[in-house]
Amino acid sequence: MLFITLGRFRKKPTKEMFVQMQKLFEESVKSGGKILSYYWTLGRYDGIVISEARDEKTLMKDLLKFADFVSTETLVAVSAEDAGKLLE
Image (cartoon, rainbow, N blue to C red; front, side):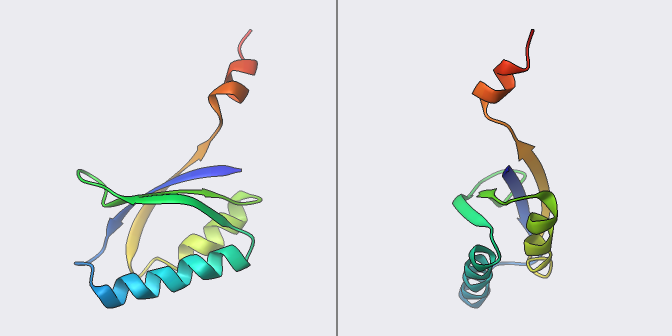
């Protein structure tokens, strides 16, 4: 399953915080998740992560590790090709 997670920092990011978050990203990979890409953004959200996980529970478990750093909103993503097949 593909997920798009939008995030806002809970406090001003620091280099130390960034290092801690990198370690959490690495742990996510070990638990079965996969970070496809991530970006810092301008506007309403500070960052976007595009990830893959076997199911919602796996992703939720990984996201809870980031709760001290970031508030998140996650969307389930379906490819345009797969969505197109659903149309009649």
